[in-house]
Length: 400
Image (cartoon, rainbow, N blue to C red; front, side):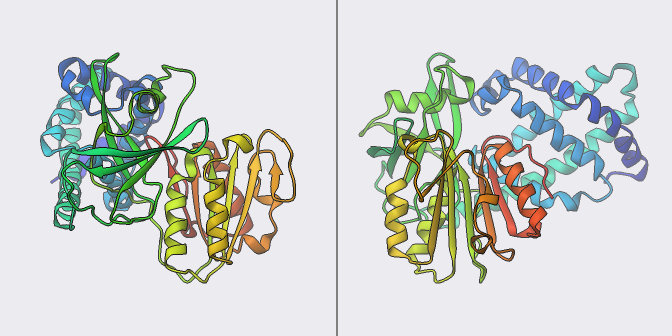
């Protein structure tokens, strides 16, 4: 157990982490991949190049140091990270490797300031957190294999259909190669997909939201092609667009994720930007499937009409459920009409009757998009516990 003296040492490093946290985590990743290059097959190397992973880890380390007196307040964040880890099949032995290189990095970056007592304090603190994470993830793995049709690790799936939603987004329909049953997934969850990228000589995993409500027949992901070609964050998505077709196989981990539709007596409001609508469509379809009788507001923004994915599907769902009201924003004004608003998504342009204070709000899109609408809603009086959001990639938002 960590002692009070060790907690004080940890808290004493908070100013250093605030100022030099990203430098520390950048050194850590470089060190770890040099000594354990096999881990490059597990980590998203695109996020290494754009520094998102280093920033996310620095934020997490700082939060842990700041709350070392009561780490339980971080339990929600721990569970969220655990969902990501279980989707990548992170195992207990990986924590030993990470711990070794993290402690060495602290020592190397801090130099003479890294006393034996400080390194020991961080060793105890790290493995206390690691034990917590391992326990959380074990529970998740146990639930995966106890769920009918569930599995752990990477399982082969066969592509049975590819459908173009726009010039940028295509939906890929997948069935288990062994013809086994599919587990029921919650609307809003995602799967990890792993492909071998010849240009990197690496397997690379990416998470994609399941863009359809659970149906027991197939899993569907909807993938946006990124530009320009070779952009680190879009390498896997572009590879899927270019080389994967009906009959090809993909390896998937089981559905997971903490961004889920909450059963509630409150109205529902969905706000998305670009491909961020994919988990929200699964939620909307789930509500329509169960004949939801509460008000539902659907708000989506994209560049223009031609790049408006799932436009016809939303119209179909509106026809099936008269409680749905939808709004579309186009960045590039074309033949705008009463059904389309010009510019970026702006909630102030929507009548307040469609944005009730007591609704459950679901936001999905880039970090700036989420921050903007989160701030607007809280300024209007919406309680933060009623605002749920998903940021694609390593979590960097600290909203409360």
